[in-house]
Image (tube, rainbow, N blue to C red; front, side, top):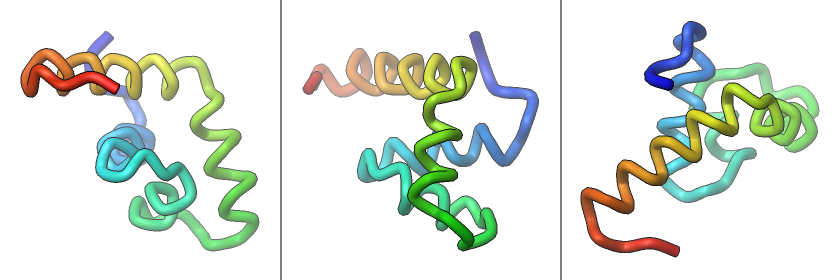
Length: 68
């Protein structure tokens, strides 16, 4: 799949991998702090964002040898 076209969505995916917390990733990415939990959940539910997160998690798992 590769990087997302939207730089902000790509950054959200990278931030999500830090602690697997969509709300905190949403805030760290710099989105407006209105309805944060709901908006973060909706962003993570987008098929292309979810696919990118899954891809990044698989890469990390292969690199570290740890899966959860």
